Image (cartoon, rainbow, N blue to C red; front, side, top):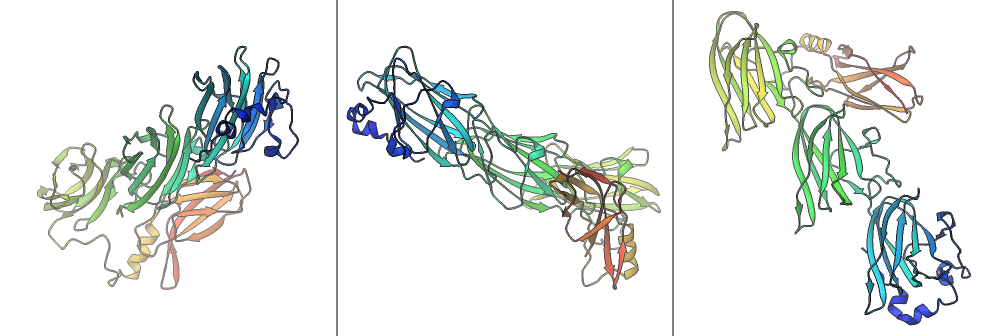
Amino acid sequence: MKKRGLAWLLAGTMALTSLAGFPNTVPAEETGDASLVISQESIADSIPIAIDQEVSGMITENDGLFYYRIDIPSSGFLSLEAQAKMEYIKYVFYDQDANDLWHENPKWNATSQISSLQYDFVLNKGTYYFLVKKDGSHTGEYAFTFHFETADETYEEPEYGNDNTNDAAHLMEENETYRGLIAQNDYVDFYRFELPSSGTVHFLGTADMEYIYYKLYDETIEEIKHWNPHWNSTAKKSVVDEPMYLTSGTYYIGVSKDGYRYGTYELCYSFESANESFPQPQGGSDNGIDKANAIQLNKEYKGFIAWNDDTDCYAFRIGKDSHLTVKAEAYMEYIYYKIYDVNGTQMKSWNPKKNDVLGKSMLSEEIDLSTGDYFFTVSRDGYRYGNYNFSINDGSSEIEPVDPDPDDPEPANEEIAEIEAAKTAIATVKGAKKKLLVSFVPLAIDNVMYEVRFRQGKGSWKTRETADTIVTIKNLKKKKTYVVQVRPFKEISGTKYYGQWSDEKRAKTK
């Protein structure tokens, strides 16, 4: 941080004698005006000063309160250097509402006959006040200077902050770095990120303060996890570098102080989709056998065990008594696979262990089942999360991969049936200034497009077509409630075929 010595201190006591005629003066060469004698009773009488301006004055028997006002152009670090030729003196620093942020009675040096101090403030942009105050009956000359260094925040904040709740969270984009500040008058910042599908978020947070909290929340503002990283005294940094295993949807990161530590931090994330066969909304949609996804024999499926979705259920039917082979791979240390009948009776359970050489667990087990309906479940074991794939094979044909060869497309009638039966779900609808931010669950269908429709009240529907699963609807009326739906469609041989409309979701613009 930039530091400059005080002119009168460097020049010695000769500089102080020049103040004898002015009980409290901001020198004319600093203000550009004639010297001004100040008689002050409150903050309302404060005199403006500038960053790096050397200010000097004198406390007398009759004048003992001197207020100054300083404007900070951005969030950052304000450093105070102050000295006085008196045994006792008091300094107070206020925010714009006259709240006492700091006060100090500096120690007297009997040898130099000077009291001095240096203090660093960590503050948001705004107006602040500095009081030099008589302490007891002591009088004499004083001088001080404020220096400043910006924090270079990505999202500039006013004095008390503008992102202290999830409703005011700043949007984070993938692979972008965001810089923020934990200030003495703003101790928490919120950020928001959107996931188009389930997958792994690689989160990196670094801070130049000894202690700090990072907290992850879902869209209901329920805390999922928090971190309080250790300080590296060599690097002078604390670091969080950890994967997050999450379903699609909106998430929030809260960055907050721990104790009385303040300073800068940086955040960024990257995302790796799990490419699930059945895309999951936040919290999952197939956590019980009553919500199981229907699967076929001899076909491979992909899934994902997330922090907020730790069980996936699948339903399958056997037309005749069969000898089945269950094959599965998982990129986590432990995992459970189980088979149940329609009565909920467990038929079989497997708990394979990770092969450290292969970096995954492998399962290949046989089971005899009679004609009927069954459920296959995949669930976490302990605190292990990640990707898995499986197939249940009756030996009648080769296992069909999830993603067919693009050079061997399905017949048009099967494509049409697939898209007409398809239905997605809206993950989030957020209101912003005269616009809506809409995200929905992507479908694992080649070349799929989406039609989003919206209306205010009982008005007529308006539509948008998009290939993205995060859409901004602009030019809306402010402070109005809109209803939104989405459906998939696909163009086959020059004709558009449409899937099912999602359930409605509502949001109010700002």
